[in-house]
Length: 316
Length: 279
Image (cartoon, helix red, strand yellow):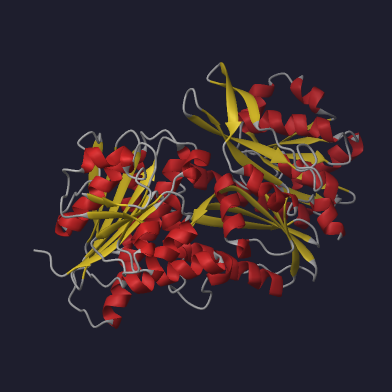
């Protein structure tokens, strides 16, 4: 690790944050560690903008106020997307993990009282963010396909997919830590498939099932992938669920398309799928009227039968 | 053109305009041709106005139809004119840079490639070329179509050519794109001429009948027609032309100024024909 690294710790418990700061200094003697009890104290720091720009990593105690943590993470990610986040807790529970993943925390660990575990987690988070940054810096993701894999808990693994799956790429072998595991598939940066990629995908899902994953959660599914999942039904396993997706809305006046995201629990649930047929949204400082552009009426039954939250799936 | 329909109003919106066009070409409403008991000849243009892709493909496959055009408001006369040209002078279709559009297309590009290493560069040029098109979903449709055209030309065609013993083919492929305000044309030509149209439409028919999820071939590459299904899903018109042993040219016309809901309402057209030689 680089000796000039700056880390921030948000933890309401003074003893714990000092202890963690101590560990970080032992791992990297030259590092600067700043500790805060909450996001307010962070914002009131003498120069938070300057601090955010040089912030390499941040540690958040998940036992604290989740909304406060989310505010803190969002504020940093907007200004410095290179910063990695590690959430920690005495007991890792799925509900806060799910909330925090949505806000960009990618790594989690049980209360870090040992240097080797903490060091390994930091290295993993650094590598992950470096890869993401490299991927984002390349000119186009049309010609690439990448998969990042992370074990979140003994029962839940997560993969992030980026690019277009074609004949030039392979999907990785992922083995769960135990039978009956859940795989969370983040499709936010998944651009598409060609016919060879679709075949590879179907085989991969079958392989994962054989290797012990029994439930699959599809997150941030874009409308083009939704159409594939609907028309080529074997792309979605029987025990697969969608917990957030995008639909295209269209503004006829300016001939503009815009995707809007819908999340389970906030916009719909497994029983009720009444999505808005029109949405008013600001585009280039102008309020525009967008009309649902997908053939959603025909799809609603498909979506309704295939949506669920990660908590309920894990509990199944 | 000569028009045949049991309902005299069926062609009334275009018959006056097209009477003087392609005078040797016959255009028949599918219902009329089915009632006439004779098998449909390859030089006929068959017309309907309400077939979904599944029924269209079934008709083309089961009745060996070469040119099937569906009525769409605003495009019908133009689509019939172009189909007439394909029937009268099919050899013109194989000319480099052949456009289905009137002269109002704003831009065109030809891209040549001959090996897999050139795919990324080819796609980069395509992405740059179609950048002025506003609709993101139309651009995604174009890229998806090109992925399948590339697979046909670079992977399936050489394999089929070897199987048929058609050797010594040049592996150079040509991609031609042009667009106007309404439509993006994508044509891909290979130098193998190994596409078996009967087999292709049979596979496509199977995919639509059984559903792509059931028809997908997980045992090896090729065979299930999923690629052709994905290609046809993106296009309002799809044209397959083959000069046996010399050239296969596939053209897709993609609407670019419609919402995907409007795009889904378009009735598709499908052509598949072979010619003996091309000089």
